[in-house]
Structure formats: structure tokens, C-alpha cells
Length: 120
Length: 107
Image 1 (cartoon, rainbow over the protein chains, first blue to last red):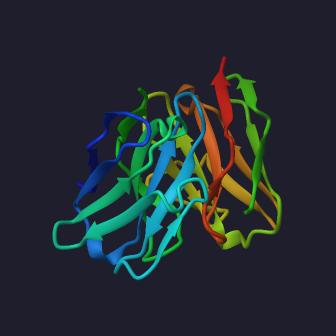
Image 2 (image 1 turned 135 degrees about the horizontal axis):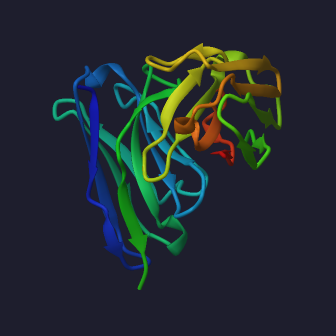
């Protein structure tokens, strides 16, 4: 079964850092690009960041550029998002999503998300 | 950045009726780069349509997509109770952006 499982979310103070992770199974992880998409409570979807199959290409939304860093470990079949200088507006459910190709295609598999709450 | 606008915001229809959801882009999007997702409450989004009109694996044929340039449409031909959800369009040709969503309520 193709599966993505996020972890690492929690309550963090403004200005602090947090790393969320995504464990993949059921498919050849290093064949595909991967993405992070977030959803603030009661709001729509916002693409956050993406990384190509070999980490050669990385992209970020303007709202997180310079604060968030995406990475992957193909040997561990894992995706990461290092978030720093967190703000209240970063509060959201963070989804890991699989690209259907090695870069820039529709997202055909999604995890269940990990909640990040930024508050003092 | 390409901005996607969806209309209507909410659609309230009866089972068996046809739903037509619109997605408009602020600039032209190649049709191969437009997707639709369904999200039910408390659940992750699910890919319905990619490349404007191709159904994802396991998606019933009552869901169809069409359009070109800046105007795209998701049609649900015969609504069923389980189609109650929020539907988002997405472009993935110029970075990645999502529309704000259309909520479909089944009466």
C-alpha cells in the first residue's frame, strides 16, 4: 500500500524552530519529487515547498522562503521540512504529498498531515 | 504568481443533479498543468483530475474535467451523497498554486 506518514508537529513558540518529517512506503521513493502543502484551520491549501527526486531542484513559496528548508533522504525514504523563525501565521496542518513524476506534476498521494501550532 | 479563482464559493444541489465548478487563472495555464482535488472534512485531499481532463486512478466517470487557457471546469454529472466535499483546482506549470475551493453540499 502506498502510504505517507507525517510526524514531528506540535506547539512551538514564535521565533523558534521545528522539523517535521514524512515517511514513505509502498512506492519507489527516489523516483518522485515530493512536496509539503499546508492548510491553516478552516482555510484552503497552500503549497509550501517541493524537492525533485535527486534533491537537485528545490522550490519554496514566497511566504516561507529563507525560513524553511526542504530535504530528503532517499535511503531512508523520508522527506523533511526544517522550519525556523516560526510565526503565528505558520500555524497549519502540514501535509506531505507525492508528485506523480520526478518534478512538477499533480500530487497523487497525500499523508494525513501533522499539526504545527505557533503560539506563546 | 498565477492566481486561481474558483466559483461559486458554495454549491447546494440534490442527489442526481449535475454540478459545474469553475476555476479561472490570472494568466494562461497549459492544459497539461491543471488538476482538481476533492477534500472531505477531516481528510487529506484526493487527486481527482490531472492534465485538465484525465481521471486519476479509481475516480468514477461521473467526474470530468475540461477547459483551456484561463478557464477550466470540473463537472460531476450525477451527484451522489458522498460527493459532498470541498473541491480545489491547482496549477503546476508555473510553481504550484491552489484555488480557494468550492464547497459542494448535497441537500
